[in-house]
Length: 202
Image 1 (tube, one colour):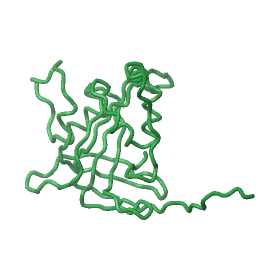
Image 2: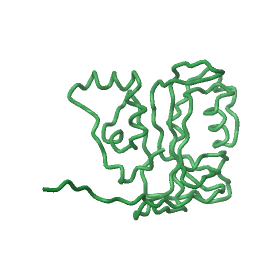
Image 3: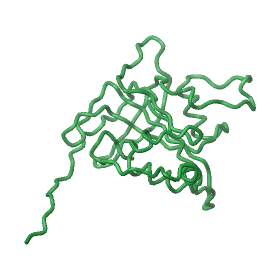
């Protein structure tokens, strides 16, 4: 009689060089409403997750080569002092004109936009986005074979949801928006995915 399991070594992860990288906004995920702490006060606010692909950098994740991806989470707000507003302006390279005053803006319209993403990575941790800049007009856009993706609760894509990292899926599952999607699809349940796949967890 025996009780056995597989011995697994920690996966090796390449470091993303600290630099300004040509990148493309690859994915926009509506996370849903999550607790946000500001001045020691907790409120429930809608949040987004943006992911950029850096086509010029391939990293070894374990023994698999993967295109470098970096992520940043935002409050879903386009007030002028909001991080999402500031970063969209930085990617565009210009402020929003008067024609946008009090006008709905479709954040999905920036999907696929090229920009420069400056990153920093501490050993053993995920790279973080330090700043964004507009892509130089006199340079060619970076190219990638990866598709551009978006996931919203009004157009919920279960296949895309199940391809996300465990960290992101667990965040979404805590939101009232996700619970509403489940209530509308009672036979549909989240599917566990292999964390060694293409996902790069936050």
